[in-house]
Image 1 (tube, rainbow, N blue to C red):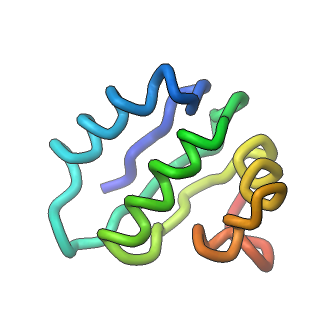
Image 2: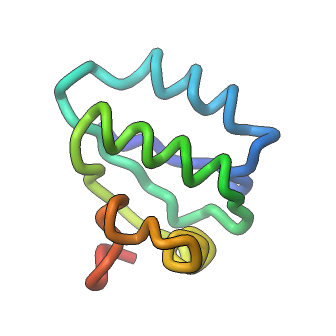
Length: 89
């Protein structure tokens, strides 16, 4: 299952997205995320993604927007999120 993220991945949406992920993700089964439509992201949004990666294992990226990739690189989370080295766009 691939979870499509909304255009905004900010602190304002983080709580609702966390609840959605908790209701959707099967523990230990890994998670697929499509972040190709995200145009706005902040640290809270990246922290949520990092939490998912740490609890569920590596994220299987179905798509990654420039906004997500750039923000993750800027704060050094591209490696921990599995985005370093040209993950799918």
